[in-house]
Every structure is written in structure tokens, then in C-alpha cells.
Length: 239
Image (cartoon, rainbow, N blue to C red; front, side, top):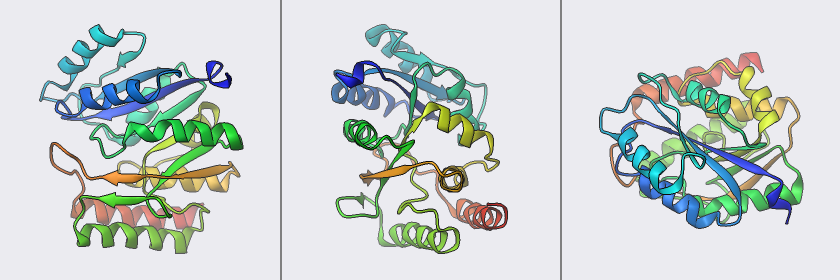
């Protein structure tokens, strides 16, 4: 009965996700049948027609359930969340990727965990029993795991998966944390969780299996690794 009081705003940043967005939205509706939610798609001017697909979905599910809040061009993940947050009417905010690497089937577990614990943040983790990564080669797994261990060692955030981006936030907590973040792109997720930890927010974890993107190409490359290391040093100095 509790769930009726809470509303969840699910922010999904997109760039060229025409092939994935309809399935993601379908799965959210499938797995949250008794939950009050809205999906806020923040599209950064995708040239592949992502926005046209979202407009079609609005006709199916209703504009009160699917909000399209586009931006003119690619402006980065961190600012996409801030943009989406401005339009969020829920008292909880979910952040998830549009490429099916974050399966909506985990959303009920996030909600349940939050309601049981009263946590300000519930984050999906790949690095505990029951979690994992599917579809990555060994090098990618080692890089991710190494990045995570390095961050753990230096930053002591009290969570097992720093670079994951599948999370449920109390909206007030997210607004507070996001206002103190300065990173862009890949490092942004890590900064959010480190700042939350430093501010004393209660963080709980739910094991998830991350699935490498089904359609389209991965956006992680060598430049992201350099950005990550720079971000790590920045957080080490400033938090």
C-alpha cells in the first residue's frame, strides 16, 4: 500500500538509442504495474530519430507517463540528469541507461530495498554475490574491476560499485548531491556516490547483472579511462 504515496521519476538520457528506447520503456511498464511513475527521456539531439520513436511511445502510453525533454546537442551525462531533474515531479528519482545494460526488472528490488531501509540512495552493484557483467571481454572486465578497486582504495566510499549508474535516489538527496558535483561524463557517477557518502547519506546496494549494450556501439574508450583517472585524483584532493 505504501507505494501509492511515492512517485518515481525515471530519468533516461539518450543519444542514438532508437533501437533500444521502445524496449526499455516497455520493460519499465511491465515491471512496475502498481507503481506511480513517469519516464523522462533527455535526448541530446540524436540524429537517428530517437525522439520520433519517443513521440510514438507517448501516443501509446500517454504524455503524463512519458516526458520528452530534449536538448539541442550532446552536452554530457551530468547535465542530462540535472536537466531531467528540473522536470521530475516524483519524490524519488531513478537514473538508468537507455541501452538495456540496466534491466528494468531490478526496479522493484530497488524500491523494495529503499522502503525496507529508508535509504537515501539505492545503487545497483555488479561486484557482490548475485551481481555480474554479461557480454564484456576479459580486458573490459579487468579494466572496470581495476577502476573500481582503485577508487575503493583511494576514496573509501563504503559502496562496492562506484562507477555503476543504475540508481534510485530520494529526490531531495539527489538535488543536494548533484549541486555539489563538478565532473562531467563518465566520472560523474563516481563523484555522485563519493559526495553522497561524505555527506553521510545512507546508501544501500542491490545486486544487478550489467548487460553490455544490445544495439549500437559502446561509448567507452581510451579517453574515458584518462578522464576517469583525472576524476579520481580530483575527488581524492577535494572530498
